[in-house]
Length: 82
Image (spheres, one colour):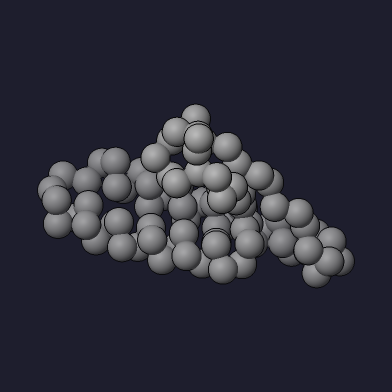
């Protein structure tokens, strides 16, 4: 099981919560659409293209501290570090 940590709100997010709520809602919609397209992709070329698009979105989220953080003790294989 992967352990995650919710990221804290930044001061700029607290100052304009409605704008940030709309921003994150839009971002989550884009992520959902791309994930659904990936699941429904009919060939490997389409999946590969969607993997690249999803990675761009993941990198954006990581760079902006959006979402959750997987603690350092996890190497991403779904198992806890020993």
